[in-house]
Image (cartoon, rainbow, N blue to C red):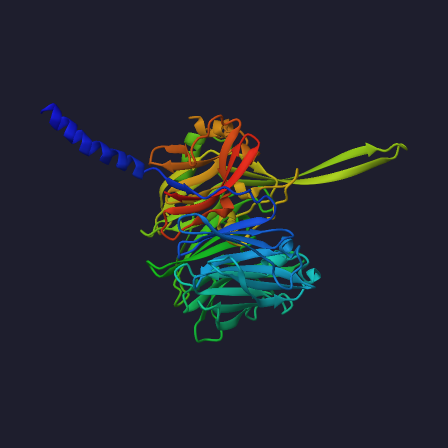
Length: 562
């Protein structure tokens, strides 16, 4: 072959090889830099018109909205005050959900009005970020906690309401728990894409031995129906005497729920549930964690708390008849063996369920993470000039986010593939089961700039398009040692970098998502995980990245194509 022909062939092949290798690398685009919002709470909405909106809820100055256009340039910034709310009202609000509905950003927040708690709907302009409308969708009177003494689930302002949107349409629903109505009713309102109520009914506790009712999870299926799972129980001698999970569906055109009792859940306690609809097989998937001691099922989870051992059960439900197609325990012997063989922990892998994803091929990916919460009490004594002693007691909550476990199983619960990543993170915040499922949509903690504040928004992990995303120290990223005990405890997030990890069937590969900075002891690039927004194409992630160079920090919105 002539030298000229070889050069000609290389000129054709090399660009193609280069393009192929780049296709496997995340493509990252950054906005202009802005000051990191350290006071308050922030969220991101990626709109179908190409705009991206950054919402920042402040403790005193209202709601700032910055609009980025399709080319990721700042288009507008608007400061919004909420009519009828005091400046500090946002600090005590609870986020219940935020979505794009009919081309508009819509947020749902609770607001304390005298003794009552309101659920408010805030609608914004997608072009300017201005607040265009505020509605009160439901109002619940103040809770008399003496009525709930000794019960398993104390109602709080944060859990009086639930909001859910159909991921395949702009229909949504609101559930309001009304403790003043003999603790036996949950009001459910169904809305269409024009924010108009299309149905309303009560999920009512049937006449039975149960006297308390708590909503577990809500699911919306277009404009046709709303599904609700609830936990019914009775109390005697300050303990739960009997309990069961109930399900119900409110169909469009009907004024009452159809009900079904899950008899196999009789006696379950300390229940957590998440329900998701899968259009491929037209089924509802209800994943339930319960105290293993009350269910007679083997424990696979441990929170190191009052109820420290949990079992996990999947129920597949027909939304038309409400009949349970099948139910099975979720166990992970392959994952446990992987952890034992590769991470070599001191004890067995008892990790909390964080979320689950139903894949297009009808397999299910379960997301686990070691969690533990600890309360530390310290006393300090001082003496004044006159010799008088005074003692101050400090109580700290420590939350630990440990090893990640990812399990893929078939539709019957059979484990297909599992892997784990060693991780060691500590922050001063309580964390529980299904933390990842809840934290982006209906959970926030206002940050306060200063010496003592927690930043749980930067801890734990996220998963998208087969990649695991989390923040960690460079020494934990760069080492080939994947033993749990080898991982440095990450407690200072500003010294961390965001990791992009993947599993090829044999080993875990880790890289720096935003690139490895020079001099990692002084510089870092990390992201706020609770602001992670998964765009509908399933491959694009939008988040807020913090770039630290020495003592200087800058924030950016970043668009990552995985």
